[in-house]
Image (tube, rainbow, N blue to C red; front, top):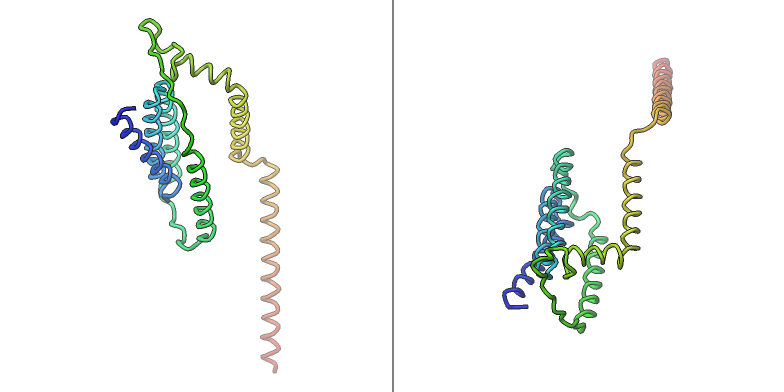
Length: 215
């Protein structure tokens, strides 16, 4: 890789790390979505440096062009403003989580530092082959890795996403008539008990007042 490529790689990697931290740290949902967008763009730059043009295009089209836009629409529907949480709330848990993350990151980094992968020369596609050639990052190589080499993880992720969609529908669905009736009956019973308790307290207060007047 040339000096310009290394500089671009360092820039994209730095932007990716900072934007990822901003996505999970900032309290504003809009700023978190913009940090996620910057992270996706930085990942697309890293894919381009790896000669994975198809992955870079899919990253921009699917995630930056669809997922982030969906997030922004949802944020604007529910309201972008959120109450600021107390500063000192959960500081022990946050500090422990940050410390564990730093330790695990350092262990992983020092474990990967001595690893040196050999450089692989990528042959260019012929003029008539286009993007369907077997070059790394092309449609042919990507589809082979996805549907042949990584078929089992791909199917497991599909099942996981299906379960997540079913769970989201189950959580977001409206309550049935029986559940609404049971909830209303419970509220009526609580209101009736509160009214009876208030009536007893008023009767006791009146009786105490009457005895006090005779005394």
